[in-house]
Amino acid sequence: SSSYRSASAIVFMFDLTDGNSFKAMQNWFDEFQSYSSTNPRKRYVTMLIGAKSDLTQAKPTERQVTKEEAMEFLHQKDIMAYHEISSR
Image 1 (cartoon, one colour):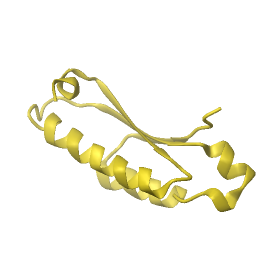
Image 2 (cartoon, helix red, strand yellow):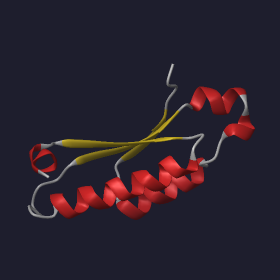
Image 3 (cartoon, one colour):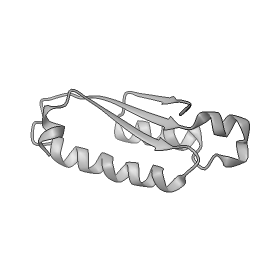
């Protein structure tokens, strides 16, 4: 909990080829919110990252989390940015 309070930026990452990792990341976000709410005046830089984009480009059927789902989460949670990255 003290890690959240001393942070300036938070990166939430999930695996584009694993829908369960996206659901688990949402739990991490909820935990972050519960600890960070102890100082409501502090603003955090927040970013959402979808990993393993190289696998989804090579084999689109591997993708389990759509960009639309990620963007919807970004807007719902007021996260500042979303990027998809290769894990290579």
